[in-house]
Image (cartoon, rainbow, N blue to C red; front, side):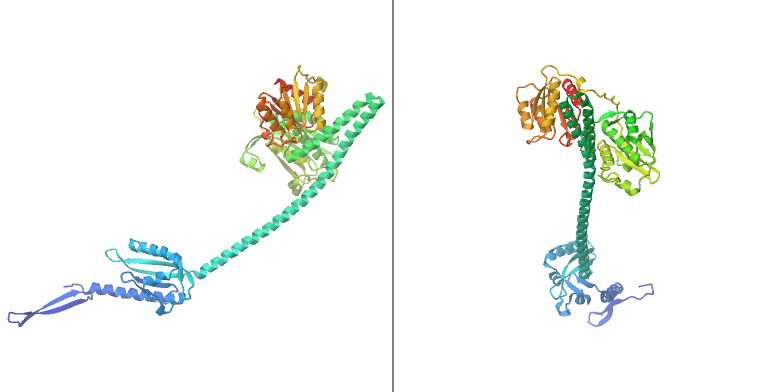
Length: 578
């Protein structure tokens, strides 16, 4: 008997008891407690009522699927969303599955039954569901599985969300983005075309500045050379040979200045052939102090400050001399009323931050700085100072190659250049060059051709050059020094000599040759036949790739045109003896 006072439900039955004569002797009363069953049924009715209320209150298509009977109840939203009337909706899972797009149907069927037949509780999928008009809606469907005491899935309740409008909006936005990207790409192309046109216009302006400056300089130099040669010819015809030397000196001076100008062009393009040597920069600056002092004039005071124990650097000394001279000339021009130029050298340790600011790798460098007390440079001028052909001087007074040449030389040497300046406060230009771990080489003394070393008997040099004048001059020098000179105008002709039985102690060849073989190819082919053959490349414009970016095999060397004949003679003797 229940001892608590809560309400309970029971199901009772009464059966009569009969005696032997068949008379009712009593009754048997059986009572079953129905409280729990009634509670479950009430909860189920309450859940179904809440489900129906929720289904009416939402815009989603709510479904309740009795898996045992394959019976599906849909809320009102399924008709609103997909256009079906009540008679068209079949309350079965089969009807739902048949209205899924054929391309999505099998995947959805497999996925939902995988959840039902396992111990899963939740299922979700995106697919296309057919509307009443035959079009398909994009939907997101999800459901929850209910199981009995034995774990068998008996029911699923879920909701289907129509994503069609949202996907349409997303597609429209995507198309807008794609269109925007296309418009941006078209606009970018237009801007790039405009920039290309601007760069072309700037190039033409630069070419105008270049041609104006170069024409002025080269006309002066050619006048000095051709005029001196004419005067030599005239004096020789007159028998006045004593006056010839002055014209020879004048022509040689003009030729050297022309060579310096072409070196500027090549340095600017970073295509010059450098001859790097371990160099004492302090000694180099000291060696050109007198030249700089004469160049800048008496109105400018020249001062030098050198760090003790200055490291050597692996550079082309002549190019650094030109760079220092150019910087001092620029400094002089910035001080029209005179002032002070200071040349300072120093050792520098570049950490990652400092090196990055100067476009360098971290490490040890030397700095060579030239400062002045002149007018200074505005930021917009500093920004363009290293640009090709940029100059603040009038046309005809400068080519605009000075700083760009220095920048090209420094970069080609593994260093960099920086400008520090303020208007009215002067300017300092610093050239940073990498430290060389070794001793500097002693400076070479200049010698005259007459004092150049002579050839041993029978020594033979093959000269391959397509320029007849150069070929003739080199052969003449070699003959005067006692060598046997053999001339070839191109690579194939040179290889014919190489493949002959003639004695050849040295190959002198230009790098750029006609006939399908450049100088490096000729040298390699010659080495294949004569493995110990020494090679001297002479070039006025050397592609680094042809010369293996400076990494030449043993016994191969480079001499840059134009060169002094005594230098050529000394280099030939050193190579043959080496």
